[in-house]
Amino acid sequence: MSESEAERDSSAELPALRAGSHPHHVRQWLLALSLFPEKWMNRLFSVRGIQFVDGVIRLRTFLHADVEKEPIYRLAKLPPGSTERAASVLFEDDWCLVLDKPSGMPVHPSAAGQRGTLDEAAARHCLMNGDPQSVKHIHRLDDDTSGPVLYAKNDLAQQRLDAAMRQKTIERHYAAIVQGKLLRRRGTIDEPIGKDRHHGARRRVSNTGDHAVTHYEVVEAYRTASLVRLQLETGRTHQIRVHMSHLGHPLVGDTLYGGSSRYLNHQALRGELLVFPHPLTGAPVTVAAPEPQWFAKVREELGAHKNS
Image 1 (tube, rainbow, N blue to C red):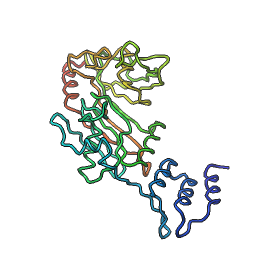
Image 2: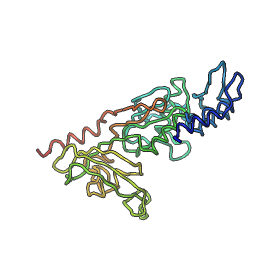
Image 3: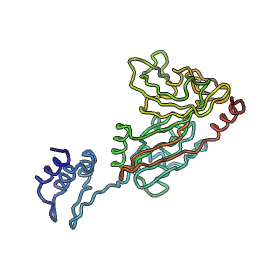
């Protein structure tokens, strides 16, 4: 018996929905049809968010966050600090939000009450638009890496986008400037990454580490460096930085992994493109981030010494 036939059989065993049907029966129907994640359906049921009225199933998909209790909204209600950078909106609808994280801004607080994070910027954006949803980031970028970061604006979106991350259907494309000229124009680095026991902030290629895969392609070659595009299959901490350093081509500015700070005092890495399935329709959404000025400046300085 096929999966779809099993679903039809299981739904046929349920009592028919009639006027006044209990929300529990409605939940059973929806779970049998596998339309929504079970965790989300149970969450809705617990807050009385499932109703059957006049032959129509109504689900309270958009539940406002408690801005007085949620820590990130309590921070967002405060005026932005003078040192905080703006994060541009690259995409938004009722279900998700993509912000362009500037270099130097952390995605989430590393300690209670920390100001100036991208999470705070996302919550403040929702507040200013009168739509305080439970906005949550789906993936992260290193503090000094710029680029698009995807946020879910409700529980259903978060669960579906989290599942997309696990199933590797969210594509993350990056651009980096690395030291030296690579021998191969394109390639794949399939090396596990683990913690460096000699340095708490570093990661390293390790046989006992987690599976990590990075694809790269050289876009331009300079006299002492190369511009490369990269795509991640996995999302390990410092993955691109570790893999490129492992090849002998650390990122320009990345002193933690052997790079030189001659042109830049942080890694020359930016998120270029984000492609994800929309949490409601499943249709692909493609979001590009503009090239930041600091990245363009380094590229142009190196380009003055470009090899033909």
